Amino acid sequence: MVVKFLSSPGAVAHPPRGGRLSRRIAYRVRRVARSRPVDRLRDLGNLRDLRRWRPLALFGFLGPGLIAANAGNDSGGIATYSTVGAQYGYSLLWMLLVITVSLAVIQEMCARMGAATGKGLSDLIRERFGVRGAAFAMLTLLVANSLTTISEFAGIASAMQLFGVSKYLSVPVAAVAVWLLVTRGTYGRVEKVFLVMTLAFFAYPIAAVLAHPDWGQVVKSTLVPSFQLQSTYLLLFVGTIGTTITPYMQLYIQSSVAEKGVTIERYGPERADAYFGSIFGNVISAFIIIACAATIFVSSRGKGVLITTAEQAALALQPLLGAYAPFLFGIGLLGASLLAAAVLPLATSYSISESFGFERGVSRSFREAPVFHGLFTGMLALGAIVALIPGLPLFRLLVVVQIINGVLLPILLVFILLLVNDRRIMGRYVNGRVNNIVAWGTTCLLSALCTIMIASIVLPSVGIPFLQ
Image 1 (tube, helix red, strand yellow):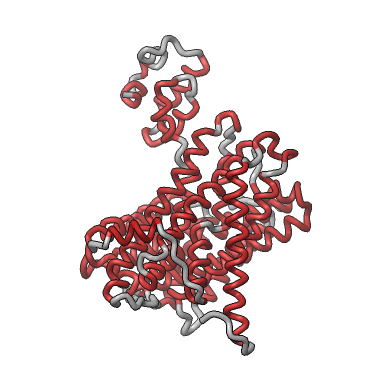
Image 2 (cartoon, rainbow, N blue to C red):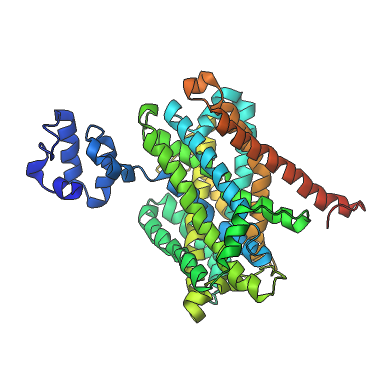
């Protein structure tokens, strides 16, 4: 066993059947042996000479792609997938399968750009399109992420209401706590708690099985597309895309690959990470839809239910947890919302400050980095204030934000596609034909759907009938 071998300091110079290692590799193995067990698999990725260790070394690279893809399963994602299952049953599962392919291709493109250029997406946009192009792209990102931050505070309010805590108490406390945790440098420890809380959503696959769905119908709905030309259907269609391929996910994965110093010659495991993360994240999403369809949709006798509260969404977990379903759902929703409420404003502030050359970093004071701290604090304040508006339908807000994300997504995708097909930037690592067909097809199709969706909302309001 590799781990057993690494734990033996006397064996570091002579791995089984491998001969003597070079001094460089021997040093790396010693470093791994002295590190914490959690860090060992990560560092194994640097031991390229040990070919028989590569299957295990692959797990050391699983990170940015997996994290980015699962970021879609935040409070807005849970609300959107729950609404899809409760209102339309299994009928939109085929769309999730298509989106998984699109997500995998787009995530891989961004990871490849990070490896080929060693730069983040905001840097490349500024260099390629100038200040005006960067300003337009960053404005899109700011709007999308500010709205998503609002949805996270709506998620915090919805979660705490399940425990009988008013949003007028929970939201301000959460906003101040997140600000202090991040700016005072203690967030790293609490982040692990938030991550553990989000594991509650892994109960969905079990709940879906225990609800005894019609698996034949599940398979048929996944493989055979169906479409309804209705405004409500289009809203959820666009919202599902918006929460699955979220703009900040692309910024995150490219920046992470670039900061790790991964070169294009050693990019293979990062590609596997991007693909695996996309599939894994959307399998969880599919089970959320199945669980809600097998419980809430079936109980409506096929009429569908428009979910408006967190209590309704929690019903999908009843086959597994019974009366404890709202409790576990609330824990997961709170953890996901708090985690994203901290990460989103922080990532946005870094990206915008980096793009325009402003000082950045939580270690710098407000006077040293006013733009960075101003953006971070402003996004938190805006999210908390909007979530506190009296009478605001919090759970519905989560879905509405994902719809707006879906509308804004094509703008960022155009920038990404122009960059990844530019040989001056990517050299021979530009997109292939299949990748371009999938990515441009996703962008054009989403743009067309958004146009039809907006028309279905605007035209009836001026007396022109359009859809239902």
